[in-house]
Image (tube, rainbow, N blue to C red):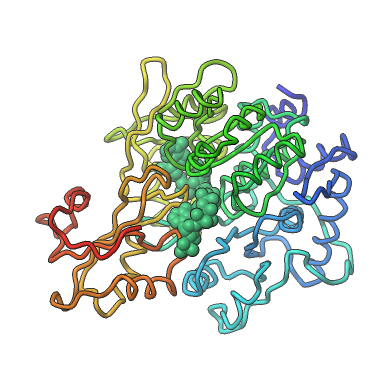
Length: 499
Ligand code: MCA
Ligand code: AMP
């Protein structure tokens, strides 16, 4: 175990900025952030630059406990703004950059932020807060004067650090409240488990508005005192070029990214990484075997959630098992409850859903374990395999989609009388979103183009159905609940278009 990790793990629960300051001051000349253009940002620069941004935010009246929406493509500016917010004690609300106006309006109404930091301010034009006020928007550089002093790095471990929206079975996203102590515990667990050292350099092409990219990639890298190459988006050649140019040692991705890498003639270059980690969705054992056979790389699969941070991992040393997510991480207790539902406890488990006491109460057992909604099975040697989900969640390309949210959007089309949304297996995306539609007028069902155009205004691209099927009716049980398992083999229905 590296010194600073031991110190933090054995001490009182801390905060991310306090842990980062210690790392930065130990080696101010260490490179921390790398832009693909070749700009290198050292620890001393990160400390100064983020303090400047924090002072500019303070000059705009932003202070501890305020909520700020953060929505931008990955860049050094975005990461510096993120660090500045945490140092100022602000609650960060990571926000998907592809959200449509209705999705953003919902988030603004629910989180009621004081400020939006966005690289596309136009997306927020004419959107209002619940009190009717327009929402102030600034670019990630946070232009302005470094006017006055601001109290930095003073947040308490139990203070809220993130409000991270994650969809629920009720169809509308809920804000998962994560404290500094939660995020630090989650970062330390993976730093320890993956032997993440200051010599490591992560090549990161994940979006920075989810737990995977921001909470594991950025928080982990900063906590380890390592460096990270920040790519604006995922592209096979860009990832492999960044590895070569900057000496990348770590790669984090979702299975769809590994499926694309596996199709590349450059697949063997994956072997240049010390460690390739996959998560957010199941990694098909066939794909794992193919990458091992063709590149000699055993992808390390891990399992986690927004509400809990990372939970289980295959080992860095020793054999990795395809189809298994390995053993619980340091500090995580995991048990199988009713119906083999996975339940967890630990310092990284969140503090509840923002302003939703009922959903929070429902999410925890009476003895305080969080119900993940995933179903698991132990191997004889204590490794976990994920065998299903208790919810209807669809995971496509590593993004979660809740059928109810899509159904609500599709149902507002005048030609749609009823609709059910399911995930269908797909070799590249894991699952594709499919909508089974009952037409208002069966003699003239809506055309695919009309359905596509309708959802375009309401749903981010990953939530939009790729497959539309017209059915005469939906199979329902005695309780009136749609029988999704029957829909997964819709023999005899008329399809109106494929992916
Ligand atoms: C893009 N599209 C998608 C998705 N991504 N459709 C369905 N599912 C998706 N995931 C849309 C695009 O908007 C486009 O629509 C069309 O699909 C094809 O786009 P393409 O250029 O091929 O896709 P891409 O932009 O290259 O994106 C693929 C991607 C991306 C790189 C795999 O989906 C991605 O970054 N996924 C990672 C998500 C992630 O970070 N998840 C972590 C959640 P059109 O043709 O209409 O323009 S955190 C989590 O789950 C927990 C904590 C955990 O365990 O990590
Ligand atoms: P999110 O709500 O976006 O945090 O996504 C969390 C969900 O992603 C989990 O509850 C799992 O269903 C799924 N997930 C994460 N990692 C894996 C994995 N390695 N294999 C299968 N599912 C995963």
